[in-house]
Image (cartoon, rainbow, N blue to C red; front, side, top):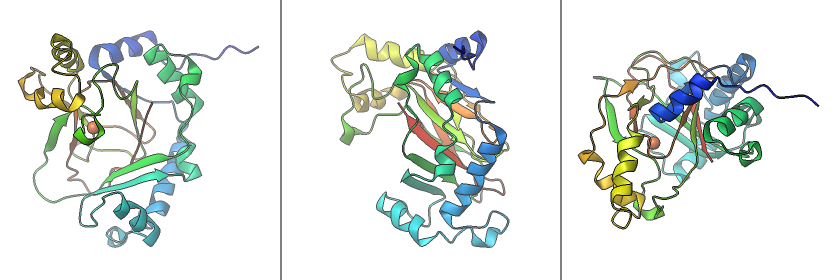
Length: 245
Ligand SMILES: [Fe+2]
């Protein structure tokens, strides 16, 4: 019998619980992450080395993305339910084991996904800014209940090296704790996530940090973790995959 080495140190697990999120490296071998990066360009039908092609999404990408609400003029390219094998290969056994460590749940609670959500942020003109501090699962139409919550753990796999102001996620360390405290202060009033989100502006959440992930880094975040998308004012798109359990 082989004993699988735990992928995260105790310090990193403690950091996740303290901050409500963790940006982790080395859970995806570099070759797999770089193959995933190349697959992103194939899926979008663009040439990474030719910015002239970047506005021209492939017919397949457009058909799926437009169906999912994508606006071709938008800087956010979303592709729901993508099954490209080189993207799915990024969900490694080490990533699954890390999530078991972070949540204290059994390893088999985290099967690798059979499809993924692509969220790529293309470069924009103008001033850098983040937009819309929020926690996930608060879309009113979905009617997610606040407890136990719509997910156990959420993930973003980054598939290129992201410079400062290059569209990295912005996150508020520790903000999940006061948000949870507000929810627990009146479980009836805050039965639904969308209602809790309305009162997020009343919570003291401090200052955010801008993450600068490298290709193959994974952001894990917890229920109530406050974060925001940011504008990409660099030269290359930010490439990422989303999944939650
Ligand atoms: Fe979000």
